[in-house]
Length: 390
Image (cartoon, one colour):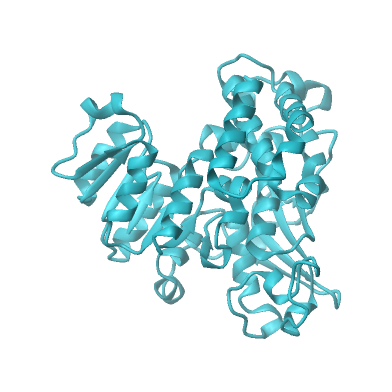
């Protein structure tokens, strides 16, 4: 298999599970954590290795592996691999081109890089993607067998669940029973902070996630609710449904729910551990047949509460309906958000400026998001947004 983003949280766990399942690691790619990458090369002995920057070559210890540098060479690496399975755990817009190239090469794509869908979901074969985000895995898990009836892993739009103008009117009857998809959010670092304090919150405060330790970008996105905004858009692309909602569930024990027109709702409970979606992506039969996680102790959960996401606390949440109506705006929102987070992490702006930058980019570039029919036009708009909002 091929693992992109091997030194990130998803990549590290994927390598461990691949080893447990007896999967051979043919190629890995990483960013700037070269010391960890060198340790992975020594342990897993891949035939091919890709890094992001040429200036890191002198730190790399390839141990005989063929080395690739930069995004275009990473795509060459993917194409030259015998493996037909790519797990993309790259963070940010940089993950889109490898996702597209993996599918162009006919390889199965397990996707943890949310930006691939947010900034280019319409260019991907979504029916051939295995989602690794815990929320989308939860939806996939529930929708495989909704209401006890066997379902194939197709998008809901192809089964007539989503917007009927985009769906198939002769859809499977069982699929017509679904009313709404629901994902959950932890609420991030500022879920209990006084509203007047949030705009001036510090980097240290924003990075103090109440439930777990994650990378810097996703932790900031959790605090601003940008992460959940993107996950709503991901759910639209993966399942073809515009009826997507989100609620705060503080224990992070429930990851996804499916609401049916008959008034019933099913929920996916699991410990907040990415091992489960990764295991199913790597080998669903082995994942089903053995223990991946400890079971939840339901008696220890206490009261479960679903809270509305307040726009006063999370201004970016105001964009949810806008993005669902015009999903290609994800290119603009993602680029502006990445610029804003970079500036925030460098102490150049206050936390409250993140939303201001995103809203400003939307106002300026909304009209340019309509004609994005290939990767090149997406990359050009992404670059223009970044340059303007710096």
